[in-house]
Every structure is written in structure tokens, then in C-alpha cells.
Amino acid sequence: MTAGYIKRSLESVLREAVSEFPALVLTGPRQSGKTTLLKHLFGKTHGYVSLEPPDVRASAENDPRAFLEMHPPPVIFDEVQFAPGLLPYIKEKIDSRRHEYGSYLLTGSQNLLLGEKVSESLAGRAALLRLLPLSRREMEGVPGAPFPWEPGRRRRGKKRLSYRELWEGFLKGGFPELTARPKKNLHLWHAGYVETYLEKDVRSLRQIGDLSSFHFFLRTLAARSAQLLNLSDVARDLGVAVNTVKAWLSVLEATYQVFVLRPFYANVGKRLVKRPKVYFTDVGTLCYLAGLKDPEHAAAGPMGGAILETAVLSEIVKVFTHRGVEPRVFFWRTAAGTEVDFVVEAEGKLVPIEVKLSATPRPGMAASIRKFMEDLGEKAGPG
Image 1 (cartoon, rainbow, N blue to C red):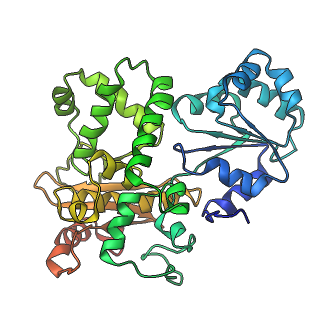
Image 2: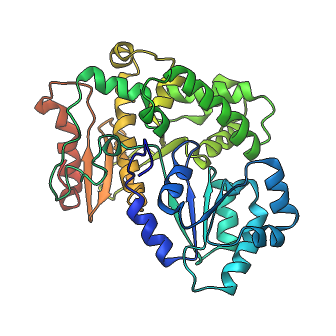
């Protein structure tokens, strides 16, 4: 095993996909470990080419057939969003040897443009999977541990975290490099990550002239994390058009930086809110954008509840995603203000989850869950 390698939950899903499809497309945010994972699993059987360097990119775009002859399958093409014109020619190669599986393994940091190109060129020929930053289970060495509402043995991680260690972990986030190299300066790493993201992903997806405005948008969104999102209010605060804010939000979704949580609807005769909430995919990114540097201020400050909610939602989304399953997660809120933070659709049931920033839970904290179960009846699972 590669030195410092952290076992990922997606490994078995990847192996199965590579044995059943001619191509695999693995997407996810920058630095989530896509290249490391594919090299670890398939480095001995597949060649490797990064399409990020300008000269390699130009070669792939200018003469794709010659490029593919130069790099025959089985091969890993990294950051394929830089050369989307290559995809129709990969399709041509696949169709000439349709029953050869695992020939082309493609990675990308963007979902918007890449998804469209893959749909056009590789429909039915490629398995589409996502790799997000590390889940808490992966960090603790128990990647297959079930959720509390699922059957199976509850396996503890390496040790039970103290309250301070838990919040230090929130500040760090889930990017593999920070887990593998724990002595790195967190603030500098996250600052570099955000700047790299702005320069490479945002500029390539949208013609955003003033990146400082987009950076301010990121911080504004962080301050509204876990709240009902009013795009008109955000636009007014930034001094831009609502359509601009919508476009910027779509960039964050396409690059896996945020998760837009939508309300759950059920025909129970209640007026429910329709506005979504936005959560950052990585809790460490949220803490950096909120300007938090130490666990005490993070836990005791006004963002404490939002940070904990982000950590819980992030874990749910990562675990489902790394099983190769699309996460079905919502929130439930009535017009009267009764709210359940998360509703997970699993095994035909709706599992309500309430997140409270307290080490001393009390029965009254579950009042909204009881109301949810009362309204949803048999559809509701254990909360």
C-alpha cells in the first residue's frame, strides 16, 4: 500500500465499475484524492496522463486521434475537463472494442461542462462516480461503518475524540493532504486552496472579471450557512444582480464546493417553506471563509451551530456518495417554524435528524422530530 495512503470507501465501487464499463468518470472537488485513489488501485495496470499542462492539453485538442494512439488503453486521463474535445474520440475507440472493460479512467474537477460532454459522448459507456473529501469514518479507519439507523455492527474508530479534538477536526476539514500531514498550517493551506480554486475553476467556468467580488460572495455565503437562502438579499448585499448570484451559486455546485439542501415536501396539509439552504461540502473550508482559527471560538461563537450542522450533513453526503449512491437528503420546515435539520430518505423510510450543539441532550430537543413523525406517520423512520 502507498505510504500515507488513506483507505477510501469508494474503492470497492470503483473496482466493480471498472470491471463492468469500458470507461469510468470520477469527478469531485480539487484535492479530494481522485488521482491518488486511481493510481493506488490501477497504477500498475494503467498508464497515466495529466491533461492539465498546456502542451499536453494542446496535443489532445489539436490531434486527438494521434494523442490516443500515443496513449493507448488501459490509461488514466487526469483532469479531462481541460480537453473535453477528446471525449468523442474516446467514444470512437470504445465503440471499436466495446467489450473491453476498464479501458479509460477519466477524472475531473468540474461537473457542469464535463457532465454535458460525458452525456453526449459516453452515455451507456461510462460509469459516473464522485469522490468527495474524507469522511470521518475514513479518517478513523472504519470506512464501511453503518449509520445509526442501519443494521450492522457499530465499529469505533481508533479512539473517541475529546470535545476539543472534535472542533480541531472541524477546522481542519476532510481534505486528504491535511489528514496525511497533520502539522501543516491549516490557515495557509485553506487560503491557498481557495485562491487556486478561484483561479483555475471559477475562471474556466464563468467569465468573472473581478474575482474579489466572487471571493466576497464565498464569505457572504459562509456567513449564511445552514440558513434559509434568500438570493435577493445576497445580491443586494453584494451590489450585483440576482441572476449573477444564481450563476455564481451554480459554479459552486458544479465544482462540488457547496451542497444545496432543498426542503422536503409531503402532502400532509401543512404549508412548508420552499427556499433552500446552502452548506459547504468541506467544514474546514467553511471555517476558513468564516475567519475561524481556533476551536474555542469556533465552538462558542455564532457560527457554532452552523459548523456542527455542516459537519453532520457532510458526513451523510460523503458516506452515501462513496457508496456510489446519490444522497437523498432534505430539510423539513413548516411555515410556523417547526423544523427538522435533515431528513434522509433511506430504505423506504424518512429518517429525521436534529443537530444540537450540546453535550447534554434533553428530551425537549427532540420536539421537532416528534412533530415530524406525527405528521409523516408510517413514512417516518427512527429519529
